[in-house]
Image 1 (tube, one colour):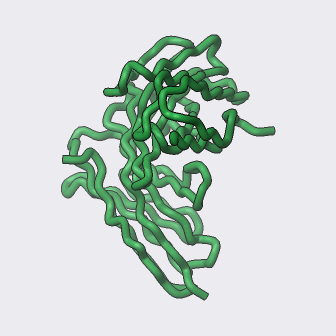
Image 2 (cartoon, chains in turn orange, red):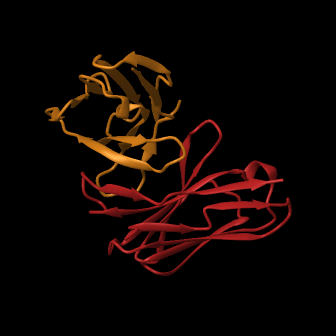
Length: 111
Length: 115
């Protein structure tokens, strides 16, 4: 079983729509969670960390559900510039250096 | 002022050749990584160094040999290149290693094509 699993999509949504991605992880002891964004032919960049209580950054909301071992990313009022691949990242150990990346969910926002 | 830089950006070479990819970060981070992203976009860690010391060495063929001359540099040497080595190789460095909110900063990637 993969450490991190995501629906690859693609998600094609109109501008202004709300879209949500989920990601599941296999290690129940995982400690840190992140969403990264990767544009076509570019490097991944941190979008936001995911805190236990959930957190919001503008139009983006991240939530963690430890009981079900999934994290989610909600994007409100989608913009054309949100088109990218969103990577779910899990760090199993606080002190370790290992990061596990999901295969990413592709989002295209359509005018 | 590129934070994490890699050279070359593109590398096209024949099977059996030996090649190197260089990575440098000017962020003052202690930890650096090499990742491989295959054609299915799966990003998998290969190596991690902390202050020039090898920390993570995933199941990678021993044709791949990382070298860290100092904590700002992590190079990757690949011997006897094979077709399956074709991928994008990303270097990364991280802030707050060992902390819950450790953040990774990636280089622009090196697109390797083995013919």
